[in-house]
Length: 503
Image (cartoon, rainbow, N blue to C red; front, side):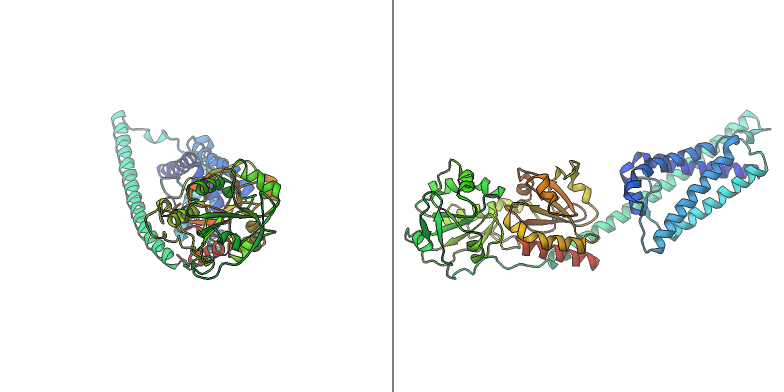
């Protein structure tokens, strides 16, 4: 009986030692596993260190004979904690991944996990009982009466058996894991195909091509005189009307291009920038670029009339005063519109990205199911956040600007949507410009990261705000660019429906 109890001690000790060391090797997975079990966020950090340390300590106490009693008490205590956590989650219909042995073995908990821990607690109970009623056999006590040759032979045989068993166990789990990965990849491919096919197709945005362009009468920034649509039509050239905002970062970045278009295509286009805000703010934004037509609307009356809910945006108006293109939203789409309207791009108007915005050829490089661009930015507390941390659930990457009038108008609906759907897919990552204070004042609960250069927007081929792109649970692009509040909410709601239906 003593030999049997000794073997049981060694098995339990090896199990806890392996579990503790494996958890320390992969602390990131351990942290996720502990959090998935429902441990409060404030306790996760401490438990990630305490749990594997306790497992290694228990393994160490089970080896020497004088500490077997305390080692078995520790083993039973830890196993009771594990059984309680597993039972609680199973009772609530949850099956978090059991990161028991780190990268060596991790699978969702189930009744088999519960049974395995119950068996271990029974074995630990036998060890405790024997250690209390008898002097435990020492690790080397079993060799009493055996010759050195017999001892070496037994040790070699046991070592060989252990190695063969471990190799078989590892091979079995690696093959099973590989099979699961292949099945998951097939399932994800099928799900992505269904998701792309199921995403809503938004009709082209803006006024219908061929309809009459709404009239306007606005002040000219340079002189304060009045300019109307009829004034622009007297030049007998197509009018490129660009809707802008002095607080819009992408709009400011587009000013040098607008000045170049005025110089290079003055015989083919009349370029008119429709902005809002004070004359001082617009002069500061234009800077040294002497744009001919910068017209000031009182608020957004012209943008509303032309159905432009994002800046920058542009539309082509023919010499007859008719709408000549769909609304191009974002710097890249506007560049493509200029190229096609001036004949510098020898192709028809490029296809839409699914939201009605015209896209240049270069934007097709960011295709569906391609890896999303890397994002590594500080949040409102200064902590660095990476997009890769959001893997495991669909993520709606929302490009935002607190000073953008369209964003401000969308904010109450976004707060309401967030409160209703925060625990469901998709999760929200907001890439915003502006100050920390301005972003805190929005009252959003989702992660907000700050970037003043709009480099991430360019990487995602986003040309303005508000706009969004869906990234799937594996970190791949799952949608085109949704421009404007309506398209953003359509994309978010479509993704949510697909996730809830078991996409």
